[in-house]
Amino acid sequence: MSETVQSGGDGFHTEDMTISMGPQHPSTHGVLRFIVKTDGEVMREAIPDVGYLHRSIEKIGEKVTWHGYVPYTDRADYLAAMFTNQAFCMAAEKLGAIEVARRGEFCRVIACELNRIASHLISVGTFGQDIGAVTPFLHALRERESINDLMEEICGARLTYNYIRIGGVGYDITPETCERITRFLDHFEPIVDEYNRLLSYNKIFVERLADIAVITLEDAYQYDIVGPNLRACGLKWDIRRDIPYSIYPELEFEVPVGTGEKGTLGDCYDRYMVRIREMEESCKILRQCLEMMPKGPAIAKVARKFKPPAGEVYVRVEAPRGDMGFYVVSDGSEYPYRVRIRTGSFTAMSIIDKLSRGLMVADLIALIASLDVDAPEIDR
Amino acid sequence: MEAKEIYERTEQKFPGKISGFQGEVIDPNFRVEPQAIVEVCRYLRDDPELSFEVLSDLTGLDLPKDNKLQVVYHLYSYSKRHQIVLKVDLPRDNPRVSTMEGVWKVANWLEREVFDLFGVVFDGHSDLRRILLPEDWVGHPLRKDYVEQEEYDGISTERAPLVEKLLR
View 1 (cartoon, rainbow over the protein chains, first blue to last red):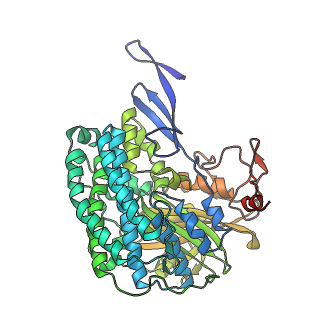
View 2: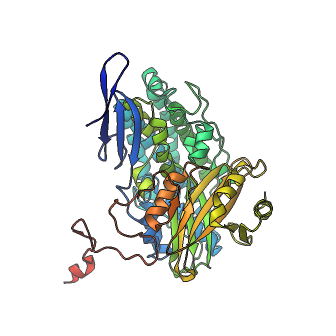
C-alpha cells in the first residue's frame, strides 16, 4: 500500500509503505499485530494493535467465588501460571489475614522457580528462533519438557496449574518429586553453559543484538518497564529481594543486571543475558528450598465460603515478565468486588512504538523477542 | 517515607485539593480533586524527597452505590522504596479527568484501557481509542451495570449451557 510520495534531493521518488504484521506471525509470540510504516528497510513507526486474546479475566473475577477464581488466573499468563496463582492468593490472604502454611510457602517457591526457568527457556529459545537459530529453540524446549513433567508430578497439570490455593498449595511435594527435581537441576545446570556456547556467545547472534533498541533508565521509568527488562537497563531491582514476600528473605540469590557487555547498557543483548543468568539463580534458589524444606501441612485451614473483610490490596510478585500487580477489592462478600491484573507485557508493549522509530524491520523482531512480551498477558 | 508524612507534605503543597487520608488500611491512600491530579503527581515525581519514579498502575473502580467512578493511581519509588495510592472520584454519568501522559508516558496505554473498560474520558489524551475490545463494541464491560449485547457482528454472545445439553 502506498502512502505519501516523497522525493529525495537526488530526484528519486520513494514511497512509505504500510505493512500489517500479524495477527498471525511466527515472531509475535501469540496473537498480536503491528501496523508498520516503513521507508524501505527502515521503520518510521510500528504501532502495536492488541486485544486479540482478550478473555475478560478481570470481569470473570467479579462473577466467581474467591477460591473459584484461581483457575482463571492461570489463563492470564499461561507461560507462567504459577505466578498469577500466587499473586491472587497472596492478595486474598492479605485481605483475609490468613497465614500461609510454612511448608506451603516452600512448595510455592519451588513451583514458581521451576516455572520461571520454563518461561525463560521459552523466551530465550524463541529469541534464537526469531533471529534465525532454530536448533537452540529445540534444546530449550527439550529442557522445558522435563520441567513440564515435573510440574505434572507436582500438581497434575503441565501448563495451567491451579496449584496454589488460598492458604497454601493444593498438593504437597513428595520426597520422590524432590529427588527428581534435584536430578533435573544436576542435569540442567551444565546445559546453561552449553546453551551459552551454542547461542549466547555466538558472534552472529551477538552482532544481531548488541546496540539494538536501547532502553535508557529514564525511558524505563516513563514507560514503567519492569522485571528482567528493567534490570537490563542497569537497575538492581527485584521484588523478591526489595519488597520481599513468601520465604525469599531467607534465601540467598543474586540479582543479575545488564552490564552492556557487548554493546550499550539496556540493549537487546542485555535483556537476553539477564534471563540466562536468572535461570542460574533460580537453580540456586531451588537447591536451597529443597534442602530447607520443613515438615508440616502444605495448606492452612481456610473456610470454604471464604469471605475476607471489606478492603483493598495491591500485591506485587516478581513474575518472569516482571512486576505482576494484583489490585483486589473486597466488599466482604463471597465474590471479589474487583480484580485488576497489571502485567509487565502490557507496559512493555507500549514502549515499542517509541523504540521502533528508525529501526530496521528485521530488528523489530529482535526487539519484540527481547522484551519477552506474551500476548495472553497483554490482553488478559 | 511513611504514608502519613507523604500525605502531610502533599497537603501543605496543595491545601484543599487533597483529602480523606486512610492510613490504617493495607495500602494507605488519599483522595485528590480531579482538577489537581496532574499537578499533584508531577510534584510527587519531581520532589527529591518523594521521587515517585513510576506509575505502577492506573485503573478504575466502579462504585454505583455512591454514584461514583474512581480512578486509582498506584505510585512507587524505587529510590525511596515507598508507595502511595491516589484516588480520584468522578461522577458516573460524566467521568472526565485530565490525562497523566505528560507525567508518565505509560499512562497512554493504561488510560486507554480504563477508557475502554470503564468509559472514563481522559482530557488531553493523544490517542484515546479502545485498546482491548473492538472499536465498534457497545458499552464498558467493567461497569457494574453493564449488559452484554446479544450479538456482535452477527455472532451470538450466548452459549447454550453444556450440562443441560448432556442431560437431555
